[in-house]
Image 1: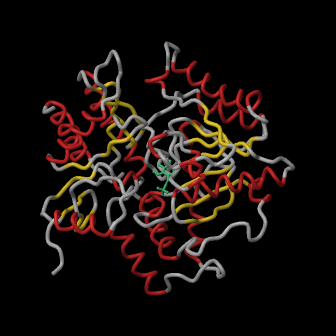
Image 2 (image 1 turned 60 degrees about the vertical axis):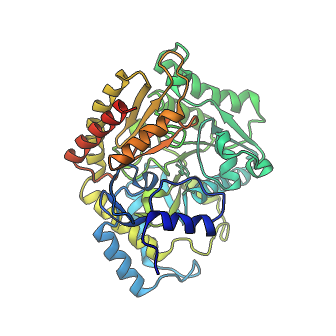
Image 3 (image 1 turned 180 degrees about the horizontal axis):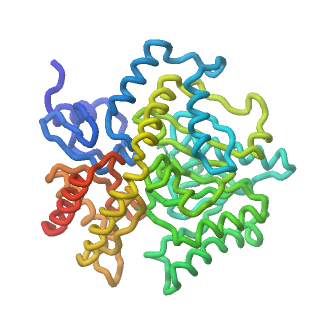
Length: 435
Ligand SMILES: Cc1ncc(COP(=O)(O)O)c(C=O)c1O
């Protein structure tokens, strides 16, 4: 007989799935729609985490579902040896909205693949320009994926423990994290942002061979703890890269497609990268990634440089196109800006609580840093977990992340309405009182 409860499914999971999986919430999902997720025990949750900041258009958006069914009836997989329109239409749509530098796209299956492909293309560019591109600069506190190269770029030990060389791809150098709350050290935010960017210049000019294939950054560090850099950081970093003809690789896997109140987070700071990695929301609930590049990069690539069996899968491209149509038509990025500003304003009041160090974010990418006390700023992952559990009991799904596992993550679908946002803020406030 088919399993009937959360616990039965959890037991089956323990029996058949590898140990490497992260501990899950005690929820076995039966169905999900819009902002709601229902489990096998009949509980219904309001999703404030959106499948790790992924279901930007809500769960199972009817137009996405229809597009998938329509495409499945035509053809599902033909491989990259043949042309098909969903891939081309999707590329055209994305390029209408990317920064002006970007002119071509390659589709893959995940964020890790998108970042891996971004670095591969940057290295190829270096070689075609008679450099070796042996160095890649990434940030401390960053997250770029769990495959060998992307795990090596990732600047957090917790993902690399006991993985040896697998997490140590040669030539990767980590620059300071623009994490003002923890490392501001008495500087103004403006100065701190400039200082962090200048450290990258020093790495390129003085502390390495200088033969840098690219500098990889998340515009807002997501898994690192929703770290919004000071406004001076990205424009200065972009100039440092441009002055040295070093490609700036922007990882918009988590920040893209309206999450931060703009279609891409780069827009907040007017930066124009050479390479962009995208994924998560791009697939509208299905696995899809993309590497978007400038003409300079595209010109360096040669036929056959890159390929995977399932790249630009037609069904996933059709889902993505439908999702992007909804995003643009319903101006979901603008809703993210409005609801995000509202939620952030009220959540900022939580900073009065002795265990809340900082509330920060942009659009619907909000992080709440939980500490032992405000003076020491000692991270409290235990309290963060308790708050997450309190929220679960109240019927809300939220995330916990950050380098120190102490940042509550509020990243709901961009379709969230004002009433749900108000209730969510109250629930969070109550969850703190119940500690
Ligand atoms: C900024 C960023 N880059 C890359 C990745 C890796 O994406 P995926 O899990 O789809 O491989 C993530 C995933 O959380 C991410 O947040």
